[in-house]
Length: 544
Image (cartoon, rainbow, N blue to C red):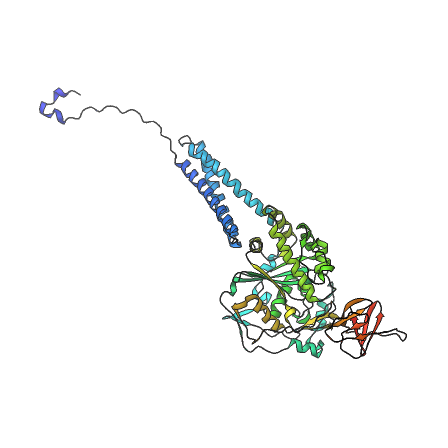
């Protein structure tokens, strides 16, 4: 520009000619790489936090089913974050204007995260893929299962009704079942049994207090070859008092079948109505709130015991010479838990001991063995519980955080035992309302206020496997025997030979042959069809 054309005084106001700026270089952005790295690293931190939390909860024996649900959410979120970070990292590598350092780190971290998440999901599916989940049962409503009604804390125990079905209709429905249906009513009970079943109404209402909802009750069923429930055990998980309780209901208990409106043995409820009918029968007769079940049949239980490497059971009394303390599956199930050589009460007690021995064996196993064990056991069971619920229950049991208690209803009831119906099956008859009250006292403890002034009194006599009443002891042929009342008559031959016995004071122990401590004035011994029989003042008794 020519400055001479401007006056000298105006030359300072004319802008100088600007110099041309050099061209800008292409700068690379690191935004996508940083985002990808942040997502992948957050996912890794999330999984690390989950691992630390789970380890601490397990060490403190506080790991529960709710934690498993939290872990599932965290693994899912971690997989999503890691997946997004991986994709962004790959995209960054193909963009020319993006820096690659953060992207490569993001891809490596995301791969680790995805590997952990996919591995965890695979293990979960591996464990629970064979679970026989009863989705139909899970969809049932409270009224379908006769769940007890709680009105402002009050336990509403409805009176057990009389028959509601025509006997001919019941016989038609029962055709094709593996066992014959017994259509019984209170009219079939002898007077002494009826009295045991109707001992009087409570003095007032019963109540459950706040906190009772933290106690979960589940039915455990062990099925025999006919599909009847040989074992009926209430599993109560008491998170308030830190206890696990096992309560047996005798298989021969005389109860109302609500789906048919007829009385029968509780063992048939599963055979007649499946798990819904069985749980409904328990709720109806004992006013309970059971909404879930676990079922295993006898052969499967044998396999589970063998899978554990057998069980060790602490034996007492006569059991020390009848059984081995270490048992394999066959011995534990058939020779021990299902042994019918003594009373139904003792038999139910052995079944609970087997369950406890299995729990102890599982506690002693290393954690690395759990996935295969759980997968196999769940494949042998049918249940209404979800995989997470089962895993939560297993964690509560295995962590040994709770004390374990075991009991049976009939041990605390005033029972009548005898044969009823066309088939002359043995039944145990007791007051179902009083039994319900005792179950509530046992499960809920101080969270239950009973309408009865006093707990039920156990006055049930000792009985054998057939329900015969225990009378005393006798020494015969050099061996000491328990003596039971035979409720069925035996025809004696005219030429039957008898041996004279010796009566000793009641309560003392016979030590010499033919001695017995039975009440009476005269006693004779004889053998009929390979059974030794004692005749006391004309009344006959069996030796066992």
